[in-house]
Image (cartoon, rainbow, N blue to C red; front, side, top):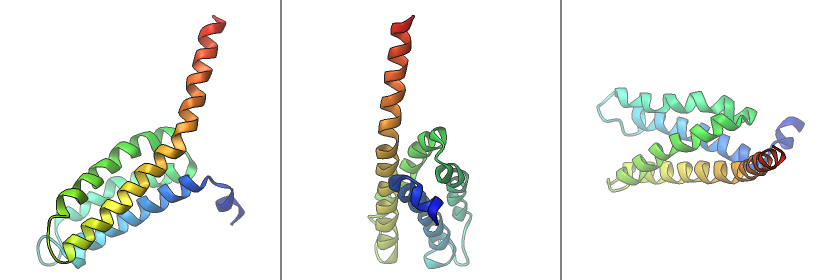
Amino acid sequence: MKKVLAKNPYQLLATAAFVDLFILCVCWEWFISPLRPGGSWLILKGVPLLFAIPGLWKGKVYTMQWASMLILLYLTEGLVRILETGVNFWMALLETILATTGFVCLLIYLKPIKKDAKSLAKQQAQAK
């Protein structure tokens, strides 16, 4: 538990958003409101999230960078499908909220890291 509490809160929130988004995608397309009765191949849209989750949990900067671009696809899907009615509206709203939360948390987490990297590069350029 101490290891979890030692992590950056934005890292934890981003990881939780990705896990929740994966669960939402699978549940939505499998049994809540599938495209076809019994589920469809659209359930596979959650698979890319699985590749990002371990790197987010470990705090890998490169993973966080590409995951911040990946999550924009889910944000876009949520914004498009929010125009649907019934349960799909609520699922799309939840997807939009989770994707936005994950994206913002990743940006907040990465900002000081990028700032430090730029200042280090500037110092190295001046030293040459």
